[in-house]
Length: 179
Image 1 (cartoon, rainbow, N blue to C red):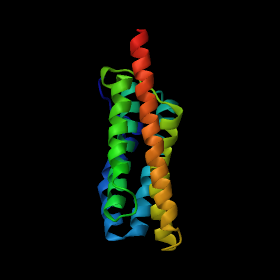
Image 2: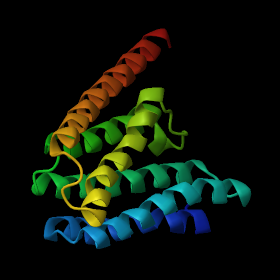
Image 3: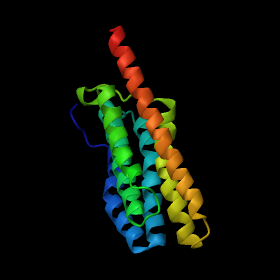
């Protein structure tokens, strides 16, 4: 896996760059700024894959970089939301563990493409939606979203992450036995 600079990879790298400032904004209650940085992260995530494919620059390394940058961004922002007691601290921990499992059982570090499962893919999207559901309403109309809904959504995401991890483990062990 020889890295090569591409526009898509540069867009992916925007997410870790804006992650710490976004987290600081969350902790300081600077919700409009946090929302703007979240928008940068989401837009870069939506754009990097299509740009890579359009330019013929998609690669295994680019896919790993894209998903890794997603994991870094959402882990840092969810950690900030946990610090201000908006989401349970277990959630960002599970994001890290599930991403590590995803990379390991895909053999991504040996050049293999990442293998997704449907629930894991949905969780990856939800890891962005939950922070947006916390940040955007606070930026536009503080107190608009009932914190009980955020708590319930957080625990649902924790449960679905655990289920996805168990599914990946089961699939990995099953494939290992058949080979």
